[in-house]
Each structure stands twice: as structure tokens, then as C-alpha cells.
Image 1 (cartoon, rainbow, N blue to C red):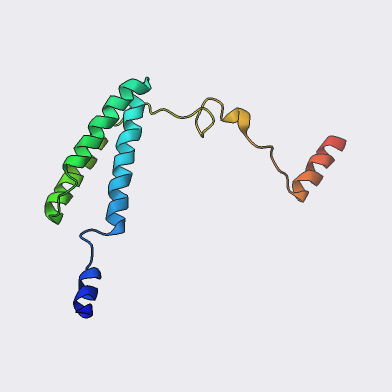
Image 2 (image 1 turned 180 degrees about the vertical axis):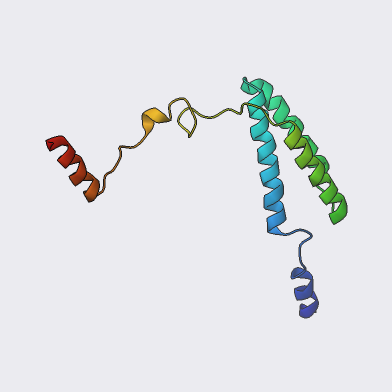
Length: 121
């Protein structure tokens, strides 16, 4: 009796954790791309709900071939609707305030002595 229960509990899940992470990453990429197309959050929220329902429609697909086809179509759709000028937060690399927030440049000892020699000349 216990051996049967152990076999049932040790059954492999239908899809691996790596697969779940991939689908979650794909969902997040859809949401980020949607944010690039909408200025107002209330308009974006409607699009986010639509994206969620599309992902939920295929939640119970267990056939690996069918699922691979669905994921390939989703990747192609995401690629085709990429925003030409994605939003970059101002303080991130490439943002409008990035250069103003650069950390001070650190010199090595050799560079310090060379700069001091240049100043004395």
C-alpha cells in the first residue's frame, strides 16, 4: 500500500520548472511590450487583462506538440508587435538622466601620478 502511494507521489509533473519559467517570462515580455504602446495605465490595464485571458485559455494544454505550436505562435506575435522606440526609465542606461547620474571616475595609482605630472608641467 505504501509503495503504491510513493509511486504516485513521485510521478513526474507534466512540464518542468524550466518550462514554467519560460511561459512566465513570455507573459512578462508581452506585458512590458504592451506598456510601450500605452501611455495611460488605465488603457494598459485593459490590454493586460486581454493578455492574461489569452494565456489562461491555453493553461490546460498538455500535448507537448500543440503547446510548442502555441508558444511558437506567441513568440512570432510578440516579435511582430515590438515597439520601434521602447520606453526606457530616465535613470536606466540610455535614459534621459543616465549621464547625469554616472558614478565618479576612479583612477588607479598610475593614472593619478600621470595626471599629477601633467598638472606640474
